[in-house]
Length: 151
Image 1: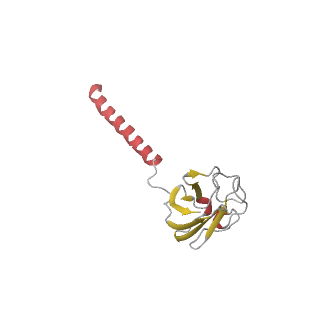
Image 2: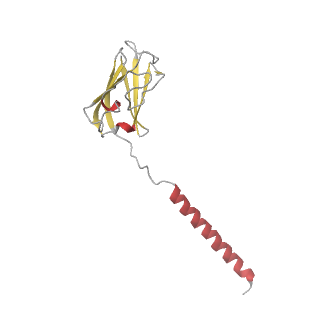
Image 3: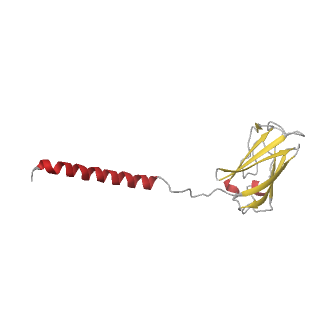
């Protein structure tokens, strides 16, 4: 057999091997699904001119407070300092938030439990009577809810 007849066969085998290796690499590096499923939960909130914001877990999944992020806007403008949930003392907030927002609280945030924090006078914008306060909750980086309340 002449070497010329073997060259196309070797070329096809090499291309096939490269294709199989690339396909295996893609399967290993691309995750099939997300390890964390989005949280399904419902909440109610209140805000008042003293700067206190209260959020009550009213239904759905139990939530690990360590996985929660809170973003607050007053009349569409974000607070200069956002609450670093969970926390005990943070710039722009009064000390000792309650419930799941407090870093000393043990356990998960369950249905029926309320968490609260109070903005400090140094955090802008302040909350005045009649302002619309928007509280957006994220759990594991998924947006869970956006609540609009009047102060």
